[in-house]
Image (cartoon, rainbow, N blue to C red; front, top):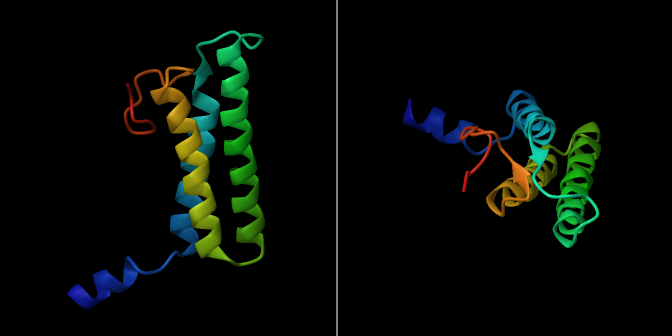
Amino acid sequence: MAEDAAEVNRTVDEERLDHYLALTARARADSTPLVAADSDAGRQLQVLLRMADDYSSDATHFKEKGDYVRSFAAINYAHAWIDAAVKLRLLDGHGDDELFTLP
């Protein structure tokens, strides 16, 4: 039985990938800016969100090509950019400690 569990942890199947794609999409949608868009902090936030969006797009592209490992890596990077913006208090995570590492 332990060998089966170890094997599951070595693979990225479509169900697991879809879970993380949806989780990151939810994090992006549920977080809101804490800074004015035209401020220095707002411009920094836009850089972070652009990185998140670019990595999310890459994740979708890799999934469509059947490259689940690269897709999984990309979506985790995307989520990290969003999470960093929450941690830096540029985005409000609205107390959701399942989606974000809260300050």
